[in-house]
Amino acid sequence: MPSMNSMESIYLRLERDGYPMDVAGIYLLEATPEGPLPFDDIRAIFSQRMADSPVANRMVAHAPLGIGEDRWTQADAVDFDAHVRHRVVPAPGDLPAMLATALEVSAEPLDRGRPLWQAWYLTGLADGRAALVLRLHHAVIDGMGMIALQQVLLDDEPTPVLRDREPSPVAGREYPSLARRALLEIPSRLVANTVATQRLLGRLAATVPQLVASSAQLLTGAADQGGARAGSPGAASIRLPGYLPSLTDAPPVTLFNQHVSDPLKSMAVTTLPFEQVQSVRRIVPGATVNDVLLALVTGAMRDYLAAQGDLPDGPIRTTCPVNVRTGGGGAQGNHITTMWVELPVHLGDPIDRLAAVRTSSAAAKEDLPRSTAEWESLADIGDLLLPGIVTAAMAFAGTKAFGLFPPTQNLTVSTLAGPRQPLYLATRRITNTFLRGIICPPIHLFIAAITYDQDVNVTITTVRQLCPNPQALADGLRVELDRLLAAVPRSDA
Image (cartoon, rainbow, N blue to C red; front, side, top):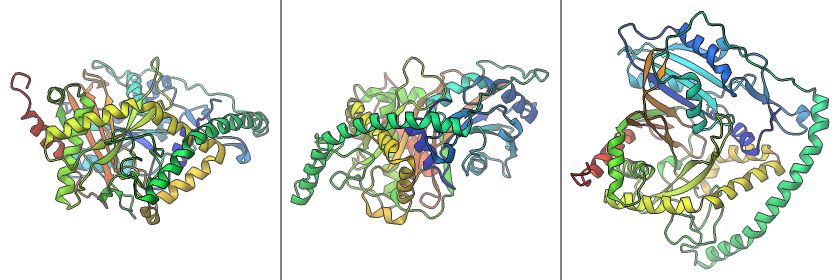
């Protein structure tokens, strides 16, 4: 059975009731005179094609008697009736109702006793459209892996469903006995822990002097910018790992950093023309499409926080997942690291905001090797202290008491490059691809932007208790884009 790396184990252990750790792609299908595809066609597509994906029957094999490590195994068969489901969107059947239904069917964690994926086919939309909600656990696949999975399920042109075609068989794998697993894994675990110990001690040897110096700065009042992370002005060498609260370099506390007692989510979407986003980047030399998207988020967050009387006088901080696949990387597993970017919501001019984002993201990209090492050290800690320690730490992070610590970030922004031509589910063109992101306290705001066909589809996922109207944030992206478009030279517009 394939090993489960520490980060995959951590993704599983971060999950708890009300806070699933799966990414959910939402594919909106065009309306046609014939009406939505029959649900039997949807089920046939999955039973005929999903077997070609390595994640189709991948599931968790728990360590015997808690000895050794959890691993991946393969189910001998997949009950597609349990994995592919149908739901009718209630009245009025509009886009908000569809999004609310998507949140409802993905509100709880996936069943650990089955392969960690699920599909919901949503019909009943008043305009004749339908939607497919595809859930995949983050321990099994990341965002780019989900994009790759589209090649299995979707087509570049309309393709009729072959209803008479037999379902593809799902190949299982021999499951070793509990005794055999324990005997095989305990020695390998000891070796792995020894290696992890050596790596971690090496990193601590380099980090402890920084921690001591940072503490001294705090006590003497000389902290200034010494603890700054990459991307912030005056960044220096003294720095805590980005995922640890810092007393010398914390972003401001905003309403999205507050404790919540109700995990009920809220979600909103918007679609922006890719050509317009592309044209805006020319305002600031060297700016990328990702920089523009982060600048749009900055402007939308500035407007929203100001309207709530919560606008800070300095930048807020986001994490941005970064794909580190090499040679294709396949459609399974996690091949990402994280960079930390400052979003200058305190700046009043949209061009200044874009320029500042460009500077911060460029510095963060240069710092990726260090950021990657920080996450690897967290994986080593997970190996040595048992992933249960991480579970306990994250459970504490979701408590009100954790609010006594400075925040590490204010939100997460994920940008994904999807196909630049339309895709089809059977004979129906996919008009939009959205993504319900992961909310994992104490981070309560996830913004996902996916380029697809001629557009950028943006999804806001948050907690209703903190943000009952996320559409205001989504609309703010369009407002900020219009501000920047006004600054584009007419010849480039």
